Length: 68
Image 1 (cartoon, rainbow, N blue to C red):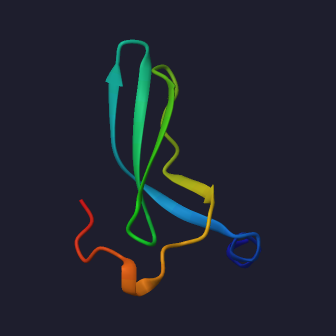
Image 2 (spheres, rainbow, N blue to C red):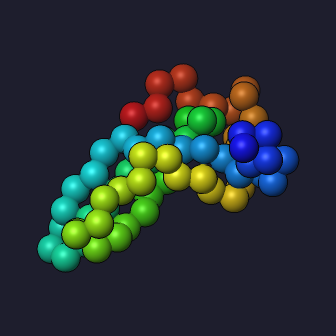
């Protein structure tokens, strides 16, 4: 499965934080390359623990040392 995702150019992101704002649940993610991503859903649903995004990872020498 991981090999298939790597070949398809999918980048794995892990859930960092979530908050409920009115009728929405905002999900904040940190990706393997140190970048951040965001997703939103209705508040009655949960945020997925893993999010796979279709983009190229940031090269290693351009990554932040301490992503927050």
